[in-house]
Amino acid sequence: MTTEQSNLFYLATQPRPFLDHGEGIYLYDESGKRYIDGSSGAMVSNIGHSNPRVLAKMKAQMDKATFGYRLHFRTHPSEDLATKLAGLMPEGLDRIFFVSGGSEAVETAEKLARQYAVTQGQSSRWKVIARTPAYHGGTLGALALTGGKLFAGPFAPMFQDMPHVKAPTCYLDRDNLSDEDRGIKYAEMLRERIEAEGADTVLAFIMEPVGGASTGALVAPDSYYKRIREICDEYGVILIFDEVMTGAGRTGTFLACEHWGATPDIIAMSKGLGAGYAPLGAVAARREMVDALMEAGGFLHGFTYAGNPLACAAGLAVLEEMEEQNIVQNCAAMGEVLHARLKTLMDRYPFIGDVRGKGLLQAFELMSDRDTKDPLPKEMNAHSELVELAYARGLILYSRRTRGGVEGDHFLVCPPLIITETQIDEIMAILIDSLDAFAANHDLPVMGQ
View 1 (cartoon, rainbow, N blue to C red):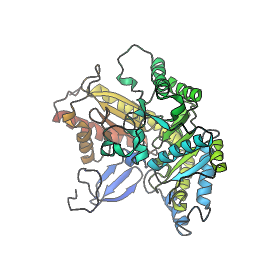
View 2: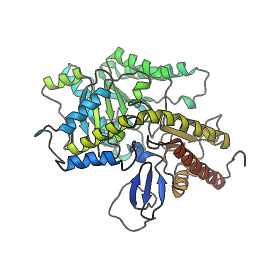
View 3: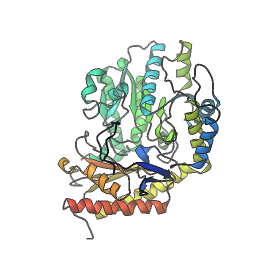
View 4: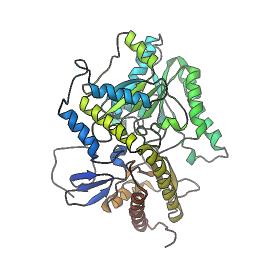
């Protein structure tokens, strides 16, 4: 591990070695040590590392041009990628706006919704209801949606806070409701919030169809998604799906919303779209919404690198590779395998209280008691300790604190979508070794020992 002084500053973290190269699901440091990328970075590297066909197509574009400003030129990569993406979107969402990352995508979705409302004579609508906990990005506009002390913290006075409803954390509920009824219960919280805020002030509702880092691959009951769409329609509220993490195949369909046939009005995506080969994100919106903006003089928004030809060439190559190699289908199949393997851990470790997810967006949560759902003591810092134990053994995991960011410990296991069953076995062997060490460090029970 390097301990030398660096001029870079990010989040405080443990010392890390220098990355040398990547290949498939593996990363290697300069000493030659191999790591399984069990989290695809931050759920980004969907098609694995150093794919030679993607790199070759990027090189071909680099030989032609790496930048052409969108107000000066059209480019074939951006046009071709927009056409490709539009064909993968739900019917009607065929207008595409490119950005460089997830936070930009969410900001773009917010501003598009707002400007559309203004063109429709609904300037009183400005509130975007979000769920809590959730995470929608690091810019001020996205932080207003995310809320909470953990991320907003000292920046809260700098933005207009937005209203929230409770995320559908049904696995923590202590009631006798069926899954269907629980989904309806949580969806109806949106209706209550809209009416409390005043329907004529509510612009949009934004949600992750499968929860990301803040809720650890949280999946709502099926009934939730249909009812959310119905409520938004009833009150004229724009429905935005944040598919920054779930889009581009991560849950076993190209978009997570496909699992429920729930079609939003706007989709924000990033991460797997560029798959770590270039900074890239996109917003897809209904044609009539964008047409209204264009007729009113254009979308009052933009970024320098929007539609960058090199980034778009990378994104197009990623999508082509996904199709040619049946990567989304592999994700669906291997997601079932990984979920089943993680569920077996509950037999060995009583302190694993829940396993959840969709496709290769999977997570497990540690608890002190499965019946009461009480978390482990926060002073144990399980969310960081287990990550370090696994990292030392060559497995990269991604962890967060589940409950308000201050306690509760979940771990995302989200390898590249190209993973094989044999490689899942590799992940499980290291994970079991790491969990055994964690249990020994804290005198936690392990069954069968």
